[in-house]
Length: 257
Image (cartoon, rainbow, N blue to C red; front, side, top):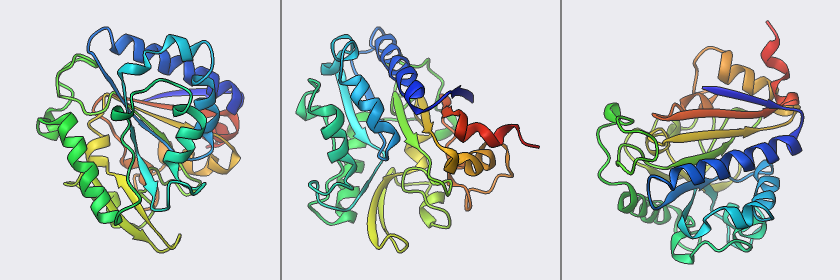
């Protein structure tokens, strides 16, 4: 695991934008596509706007990107809470990614059916994957199907959740499905989400975490006792690289004894 600490969210966003652009360029020297799963939440919005502007709008080979999402609220696309809508509003409407390479989690059908359809798409991209214990045998970006996504961007909630893996929910321990849907009583809505099963087969996972509200959870996830029922972000242990990009406010608790 690599921890990167920045002064604030703005500095973090610019640093992560450069890091992503460099990673895309490096990967595309070894294979002809780059698969990335986007995150919802407030922190990625600034990152998206930076990527959608010069110099990255021109530098990144957007036509070779294949876009996915980590999770989605089962609300209409037009709803401001929809993660895909946020990504279009801040990034995808401004860069030339072919529409056929953008894979939203559908919310115009039943959530359970949406998860089934999404898993089929994932298998089209990433089969055959070896047994989980054998993942990572090939080098990052080699084109060998040892890895799933080239990059998964994640956020973490104040409660330590990531994706739609919320504390105390059964989906935290899902071992078989790559995508699933469930009703989250606390939010009175259905959620559609990737599971740790496919995310942990990624070549790289990057958490973006900012703000004092995240400090306690970040300390527990990185330094606390392993208890994913309380802090589900602890379950993200990719076969490839794991990066945490945090600001000083979120990192404040890490130096405490």
